[in-house]
Length: 132
Length: 137
Image (cartoon, rainbow over all chains, first blue to last red; front, side, top):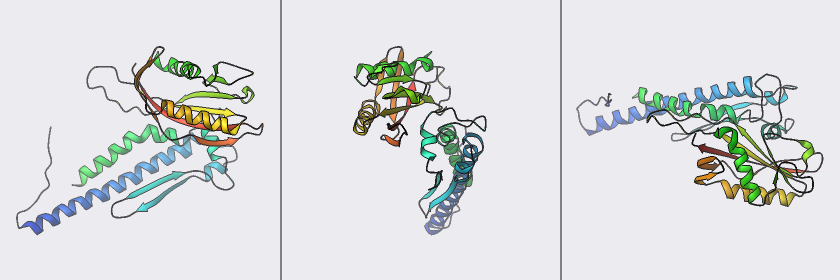
């Protein structure tokens, strides 16, 4: 059992405030990086293991994008589909037995997300904790 | 075994609620478990898929099981397909601490309102509703 404290040197409230601000910024940046890495891992699992491949078009439309990156929000989005591959939703929602590769299946995006969501949360928590 | 029976308990519950008949019903709405068939006609399909494993053993008690499942509603009449989907979503989306058949549900959580998937080549409208369940073993 241990508890970590922020290393705050004496020297007045301005100094303390600056150090706390720095610690928050470090934790924020580390959290964002952990989220990026964890989401990319899910993206790779989805595209390489779960996404059904017939012509390869559906797989080629997979995107892992940073869609919001402000001082208080950092959002990534994994998506499939395009005008040509407008069947992405059908393949995802209709429980056919899909083939090729062997573990390909419907819910090719939702399954890797659900399997990894606790790990993602833990990665972000750990990164923030270690940064301060 | 709960995981093997929870969908059939849910199917029976939907039958009791008047949504269809468990098994094949040529003149009505079939409620089918763990299978999707183009030839069934008007139907409700229940299919389980992987959920998260989010519980650690800390208390010594068995962990709850957390499967996800889909209810796919198909009907030749668009409004019927939509209405059934919404009714099933509202029926199940926030249920907690109840027993159906041999299954005790700690809760069922509706992930999102019904999603229109497609109109099939044979003229059926399909809506997908997705849930997470927490079951005691």
